[in-house]
Length: 328
Image (cartoon, rainbow, N blue to C red; front, top):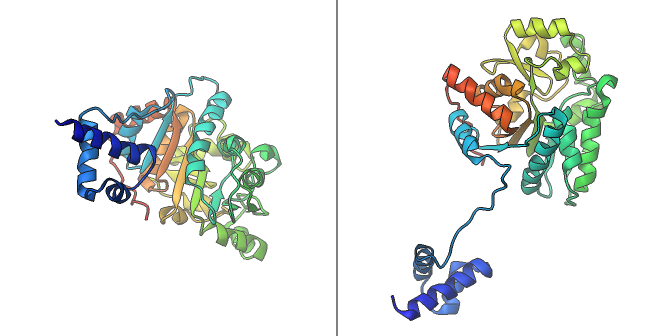
């Protein structure tokens, strides 16, 4: 290899990697063709002049994340080793990673649909200030009520909107109504129907994941179901809930309960939007499998304990992969 070619590789690599120039711009400056620039860049990597290094945090478990991505069909899976056993501390660290991810995908002129719960509140608190133009944060499901007001959707959308320099819209009503007819009537009220309509057209959805394996399921904590009702629903096949809607192990909705929900349809999660689920705790494993089968999310952010339990369940059940269609 002549010295002139080596110096040419160094020059091309410097312009490309350090000065962020396009290959065509480099070709014009150096006086060579664009294909030659491409070959020089490849040669620079092969000769060790350029080394590509991924600076991945020690807390990110890329191996198990890649396997879950492949086996469950999610477009993206991020697994965080929080190195914590206490739920609140684990969720706090998980939320910081989730906030980093969300910060990278939110852009001006977007509508962000968010649910409620501990994961959502932790995310809202962890989000850095990111002033954008014309961002709207919209509640996707009615309120938790006074028993869990600290994690309510109205609080979450308010905090997130403030962090993003945007506006927010809340649903003035409970997440679960006594009957389907009452839920249908409330959905006709303009103050509620307009918010649901905006939420149904969001660019990004972010939600926590509820499990019926948990003794403190979010619907139970909010007072919408009793402990006995949770156990009864679990015995009938309920394993998960998102947006206050219950799913069985195949990802199907438990309609006699879900008809009473004041929330957007889960079909909204199956469109072209980016749909992000955030969860900690190994108790969420069965719920995550159900959500994967239903293809409600394309991005999953979970802690290592949860990921390991999901893998264990996959090995036992030989879970069939369900591919989520790629985002447009």
